[in-house]
Amino acid sequence: MPFIFLTAYGSVDAAVHAITQGAFYYFIKPPDYIKLKGILARAVEQRSLKREIKELRKMVASGSSSERIIGRTPEILKIYDTIEAIKDSMSSVLICGETGTGKELIARSLHYLSVRREKPFVAVNCAAIPRELIESELFGYEKGAFSGATSRRIGRFEEAHDGTIFLDEIGELEMSLQAKLLRVLQEKEIERIGSNRKIKVNFRLVSSTNRDLAAETALGNFREDLFYRLNVVQITVPSLRERKEDLPLLSAEFVREIGVKEGKTVIMDDEVMKAFMAYSWPGNIRQLRNVIERAVSSQGAKRSP
Image (tube, rainbow, N blue to C red):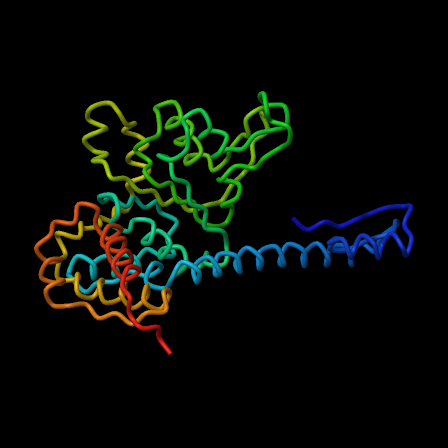
């Protein structure tokens, strides 16, 4: 967060100390308001650039093949076409598929190929956050809103302002929170816990599920009105056993990427590929990458020059 000082009791020493400690700028009252406006704009721009650099570093650190969709089967080509067609749309997207098929990768592709690419991409794993914490995680809270709330915290929807929020495994949300989420989607505004002030938020929602939400809706486990809000555009990601023609391409890319990371040159034997093609891969691409990483790491191959 950029800090700008505005004080009537300034001095050169105080200004130098503030700047060296990380302050963005230091004004002595009365300020030049035109200059102040320009400095504020620069501070906001710098914060956006830092966010973008952080995301890019995260992408580089995680490896290239982990950040791009790999495959040439008709099902994957259809996903490419869908992403291209809807990348700049404001419509909500629901990505369906088994665990480990790469649903978050598709969500990231939708964001980073869109006009929102320079804005935040905020991912929330709804299945990984305890139920008693998910509301404060999404909407934030005010100081003193509950025991332990020693300071204000903004929620994920505010973090995603002007960008994309990705709600992974949205089928895990309990009914009371589904109602609040529906209201946020309708009104595009949130209220922090402990506050009645409405805050406008502009975001694109992408969500994912490994459940059959239509069936869950019929059973009364998921709100029908929320389902229709989420399911404006649906992308169905095939399991790895349904796209085995992509196995050689995926395997070769993972072997290359992990070999580079480990400093090893590894060649996949034909017998290994036959075994891969005969296996059902219940854990999908995540399992394939894990198996290859374990195999490459355990190899005593020569170090690359």
